[in-house]
Amino acid sequence: MSEANQKSPLLKVNDIHVYYGAIHAIKGISLEVYDNEIVTLIGANGAGKSTTLNTIVGLLRPRQGTVELNGMNINGISASKMVSRGLSLCPEGRRIFQQMTVRENLEMGAYSRPAAEIAESLEEMFQRFPRLKEREKQIGGTLSGGEQQMLTMARALMSRPRLLMLDEPSMGLAPILVEQIFEIIKELHESGVTILLVEQNAQMALQVADRAYVMETGLITMQGRASELLHNDAVQKAYLGS
Amino acid sequence: MFFLSNLVNGLSLGSIYAIIALGYTMVYGIAKMLNFAHGDVIMVGAYVSFCAFQYWGLPPVVSILAAMVFCTVLGVVIEGTAYRPLRQATSLAVLITAIGMSYLLQNLALLIFKSDPKNYPAQIIGMPGISLFGGQLKISGVTLVTILANVVIMVLLTLFINRTKLGKAMRCVSEDRGAAELMGISVNRTISLTFAIGSALAAIAGVLLCSAYPIFDPYTGSMPGIKAFTAAVFGGIGSIPGAMVGGLLLGIIEILSRAYISTQLADAIVFAVLIVVLLVKPTGLLGKQIREKV
Ligand SMILES: Nc1ncnc2c1ncn2[C@@H]1O[C@H](COP(=O)(O)OP(=O)(O)OP(=O)(O)O)[C@@H](O)[C@H]1O
Ligand SMILES: [Mg+2]
Image 1 (cartoon, protein in one colour):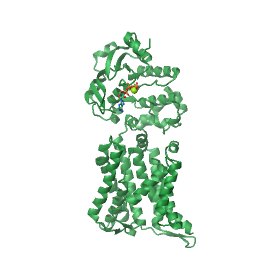
Image 2 (tube, protein in one colour):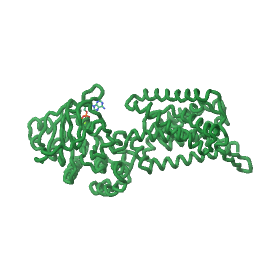
Image 3 (cartoon, protein in one colour):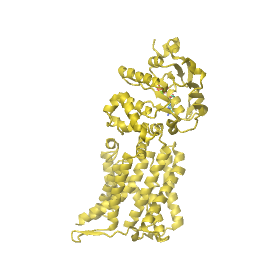
Image 4 (cartoon, protein in one colour):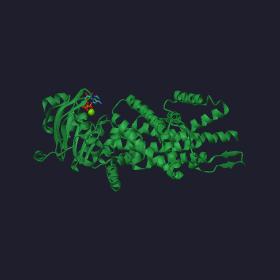
């Protein structure tokens, strides 16, 4: 990815400030994601990682600053228009549609795509996540936590995103499932998807990522190549527990 | 026979409640608000069909369609101008706006049509009645049409919600607005569509209601509106089968209490039953937990 920096970024976040009422949650963040990279955003609880992703995708509006996708300013464009621009967010906390079947959930993921293309993508997801295939007709709310997480990811992939943003995909999963999730992230990356990954599991995130940003209370305090941050003393102390 | 005849009348009144309750329940389920102006859209539907038939001489079916189109547009406009700007506001602010909208519609109708009651023409639903058991049980044409309309509406709406892309989008918005947007579903458009459907149904309810009880005025929509809202809560607000069950039960209870207990107490009994149901099952008969399995 060393040549990546010479190209223009796929996603460029420019000094954004985000408020929840009077709470100043994001205090001027800039970051870039280049084509075909895995970039990770790590930081403690409440640092503002989810807020950043939600702002990028248009669920929240920055009071100041800009978000550019592919060189185009996407400030103020509603979140519902983002999937068709190739940006997909897999939100925190397994927000599948509880009352819909696994299959319906996946179909909703392809809402913005022509109906004729859906069958093929469904097949693809069932291959990548065989567990979902077995549970195709099961109601989403009755899936186990891990299965729901798989479904959230698969649903986000159904739109065939160019940039996939994952908000804590390994949260609350058993170690073996965490491994599996990271395996899938690597596979997706190899198949050409660009990934912006928010994680609590800094160790694994830094291992899989090309570059990383470290957030603390609404600010980016460190950034660099993931392999370097992995061995950085301050990062090790704060996030890797050593 | 007396009982059977009352039961049929109860079913018919209940069908009207059910059709109105659908509007409340869909808007509540998807926009998460109580649209207290919904009852007054019924009244508007009644006046539009009345004018179309009586003053402009349009055929009955066209008059009904005119009322549906007018109310659909009205519902979408009300949502877009009065409720949409309050999407982030507290639910109390939205509720008060809805009550204000209800008064606005009533007063506009008063201004245009004056307060003296009008007589709804019987020819709009000019179906002959039938008589069964050698004339012992007579069922009017309006009653038949009402019950049939309710069944057709329920079937179509259920198919729409469960089978079509737009219907599924509605279910997504109802469950999780943010996640629905991430799928590419426009929340605003989905809510508009919900108001459109609810208001078109209100227009139908207005025609049916005034055909069954022909004297109407600008306040005609408010009492059935409140009863239908009760029916929606009774069945489990947010649930479409709940609106159906709640509406039918409410109509039957009301008519039977009127026939066997007391005319004056009928409404009190209806609300007493509601309170008991809510004490036993706070989410209503088919509220949330059950709906999830549908
Ligand atoms: N809806 C909200 N209203 C008010 N404050 C909020 C809201 N959502 C988040 N915050 C605040 O904004 C800050 C950043 O929250 P955010 O969810 O972005 O953190 P995070 O880095 O994703 O944390 P975690 O790792 O726990 O998910 C926190 O202080 C949080 O309390
Ligand atoms: Mg978070």
